[in-house]
Length: 364
Image (cartoon, rainbow, N blue to C red; front, side, top):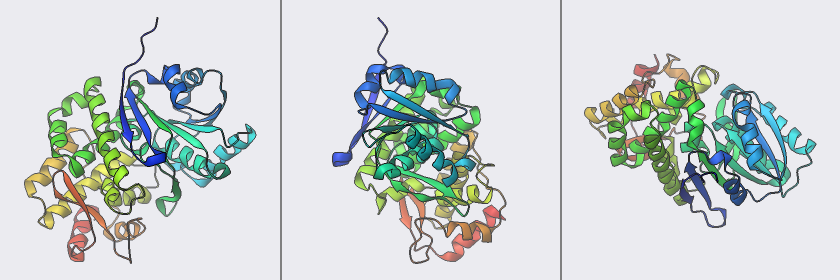
């Protein structure tokens, strides 16, 4: 008799939209686990050219007797567009999927965001399940119900909130993740320590070498704690009207980097890492954290082989792109900054000249 994979469970508490995050090794092949959390009898698996040869057949077997179709998309953030999204709708219609069907997102954040958005729109909303295969997706993009696509003038400008029925985070899939993609995911893990949990940040500093070596025990805890923190924040503010915005530490600067470089030169986690360094620097310039705390943040990201310097896209261009951020209110760029290590806030009342000086130092 085969051994049943052991998994940990983190629950997202959103009333009737509540769902579990299941974390463990070997979960993708566990037909009984998939069967318990995928209610639909018909399913479309959305994946990409990189992931399909690795895990598509395993997930299809785990779905058992269900009617299953799939669509394989090109890989890369540059393909997160309305044009690519239309291929998912074409596949759903061609497979004659109805409202009692489900979409399964098998891949990283790009696949998850597009598959979730397609599920939100198709026949005005059908179920979907996140099956993230990258570290960044397991700790961040698969959790919380944000779905969407990019526009040439701004990242994630077109989308919807649509919560999944379940997240199945099989950490064994991280073994096939490239070193660069894995490191990019660690940026989002560091983010949780910076914004919410100073003890977790200290743990990351102690375990940085183990994480860099992909120690499975360290990865498992990092994914679990990241999901626990995101679950608490999302449950308190599902649609980002307040607290949830702290999850965007470094993202306003990072999205400007991604947009300016065409969504293909920098990975999302890499841009967020550089963005968090800028946010930490601005926080220190405002006197909210010490220079020593700023260096702790930068040093940890550097130890994890993540970028700590932004590309020289120009301060004026960076500011213009930041003006498209979804946190902008009344023309004011609101930023997620650090009040302390482990405590973040969304602020719009900073002196504009301090932001200008920071942008000049980092982007010129």
